[in-house]
Image (cartoon, rainbow, N blue to C red; front, top):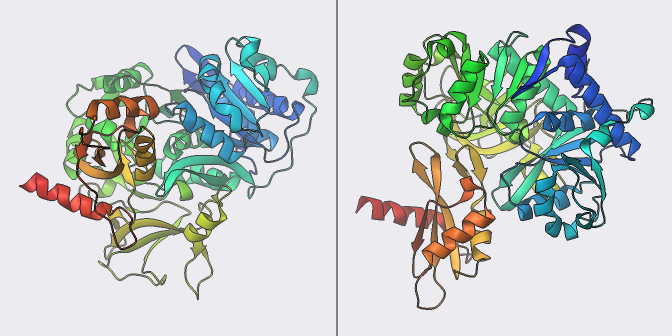
Length: 523
């Protein structure tokens, strides 16, 4: 039985040490080499005084060091915190402070942009820099170590990793919350190991697979590409794409057998030429992070006739959730399927009782994939992670997603039970968008809402009230957003209203705003 997430790698290193584990550009690392690097990084942490469950934040693009920095803390008994590399410095600083990171792994250029934002991170002590170490005047009060020096701890290889069980923390994944700033979902070693084994079983992954890692590694589905590959000894190919066509080129270059997409990316590739070599090698494609239009699913069935298509639904709080088998794609292409192996999902009423067939309810998750809760947030944890009912004490995560179940047990997504916006595969908090725009000083008040979009799932529209009588500075607002937000969060449209509707509690009523926008569209 495996207790540590890093055991996925060390087990493969024992049985197939020379098999490629990770490929990035011109670099290739075997399982034996990856296990050695992970172990060295872990011993570097121990030598630096890492305690059990200390948080190690990683703010890097996709590269070899990123993968090693994820699994090194897991080996040593720490907790890794992936940070989306597209986040702005103030957003990164919030995560570092919130999780109490003691270690940060980043690049020299990213450190230069971060240093002025880190005055409120008293728990952080050491920064591990990939590439050249910056000048000493950029150190502030932190111990700066080059990544290469950090791994050169051969004389300390006898340091003993902290004892870990599969119930201990392994990672904190930050995801936008419905009430504002990102929240950290705590996952155990067991959550992630079981999740990897479950996904690999229904995707039928083997050591012969070459899985193209397109999604961000800070995204639970992106991280799952690594853990799934390592659970069976497959090869993970890291990719940071610039254009959708690059995905096809990489798939051809590396004879890729499996790719998981968010629907907006895959939809952009529907009219592109897929070479015969790709069609012959690509065993499956999968989608997650949003609804895949039925028409698009049918289109890709024709484009990739030899490839299985898996429609997947996931929830960070439960790591992975449901999938629709390829055999059912033609019969019920609008379904999100059934629970993945080893998961238990149910459609329930407010009191936790099971809904009838065809009755809309909330999707809840039970079993070994349910996460440990939200980092340092017992109130929200109690709200989301709670017993099924007063008579059923089983711990469940209540998703907030509204679904229905058919007579065969297949599930159909209806919508969100909160105001979350799902754009380009990212769950985005309207409150976070509003807070940033409000900080510009260019609006009196504003509200962000999600609007349906054929390719992106949803896009963000902002309705705002201008300060004074000069009218709204649209260009200024958009320019401010581009400097303060990652691209997926930047509004697609800003609209000026004289006032925003409020509910009985005096809060901005987004539902009324959405209805008014629908009326304008239909007028």
